[in-house]
Length: 245
Image 1: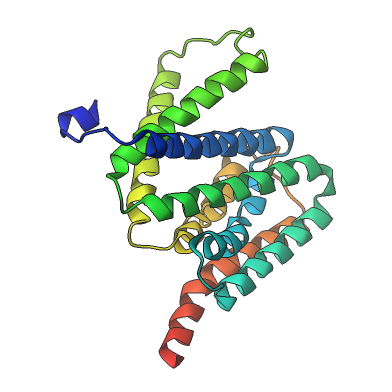
Image 2: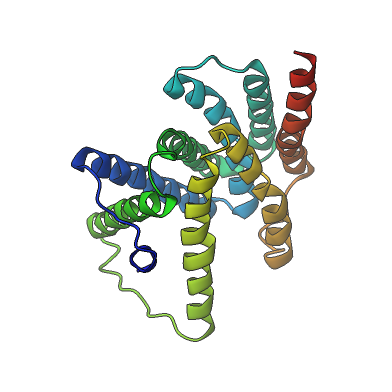
């Protein structure tokens, strides 16, 4: 509807449409694994381990764009793995959640790199339209195959409907299109680093909203601190080494 109002054409070649729909499937798998990780562990563990997306991006982006691996990105990516190891060591009871969060991070890295490669070809709204449709179609099929449609869906009302609209329109659709637009000028790795600040405020909010289920061991916060430090160190170190080169 928005694209029609702005008179932005949706016509693409069939191969490109299939490509965008395929990326949408990757996004849907990312959502499935991410929310399953929260279900079998908690918000803090899922967000903390999800910061490994920088490591996956540091490997996938050079491989898929056929450029050399930047040693600083790889080094900081390895630091995130150290953080994950610390979390795993102290939060072993959440092994399933850690594994699914790692899978979600890998899928999100793939989504970012694939979109980085096509972000300059089409309008962000067009890319988002086909990818979101592909994700919607795959999720519908997933619910049908797994029998989750049989469980029925409660129709939201009142406050729930308002929150769902905020989550869908602002936190998902708009954010999705904004990321695609940003990828026109920034590398996938840089965008993923910015997104990796999510564990900082996400863990804090989770602790405030769900204090009974989000109380973690000191080892978890040590591992999360290692992950966040890698995120914050990247722009500083990159600027320093670019000046020296």
